[in-house]
Length: 107
Image 1 (cartoon, rainbow, N blue to C red):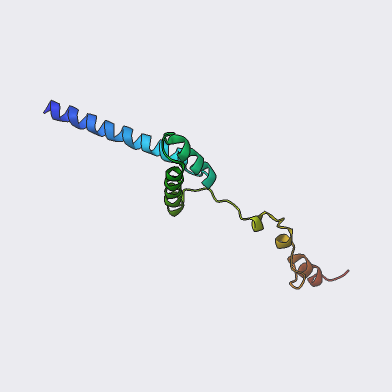
Image 2 (cartoon, rainbow, N blue to C red):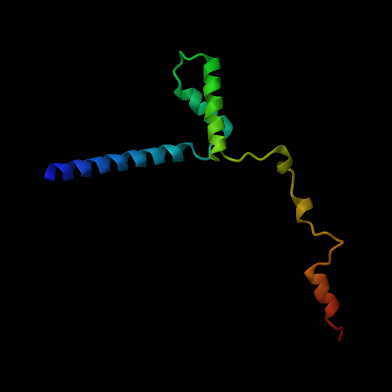
């Protein structure tokens, strides 16, 4: 009975350690940009692997990470323009300040 309990405790401990290690590895790769992922994959592969195969593996890893939503969002060039045009109020719509000025009687 004691041997089974000890075995169960060791198995649960080992499973918890593996889960913690997997979570740490996932956090290490989470939020990287596509270029960073490619560089990291190619860095981990042995130098004897041909460049074509490295690129193919990196493409597969990036695709899987993109599907899972793990890649950092890279802003397109259009979004890098100043947002001043979006923030400026539309002159055709009255603002709250203009409404309040019209409603207050002059004394």
